[in-house]
Length: 126
Image (cartoon, rainbow, N blue to C red):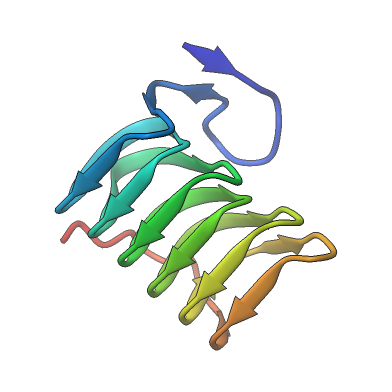
């Protein structure tokens, strides 16, 4: 659907949650997911390479477990990134962050603990 070169194993966005859309419950996905809307609940990437992109309008209230996360919106809850976390200038995470590799732009905020994974992190499926 959408493609963009960058860090991580997935360069294609397969699904889009548009602005004005609100999802409640557990959201499981494979491949690439772009979110402009709101999610209340868990966001979990299924096995294989995954990429979650949260625009500056996106809000997630719940825990997130993905391979590659690009965030410019808000997550309230624990975050687990098995490969690469990119926090853009308007990014805000309220919760602990477990990561393998991180890039933070000026203006990005984390209110919680940063936990560096000493070994590759296996993705959780539930």
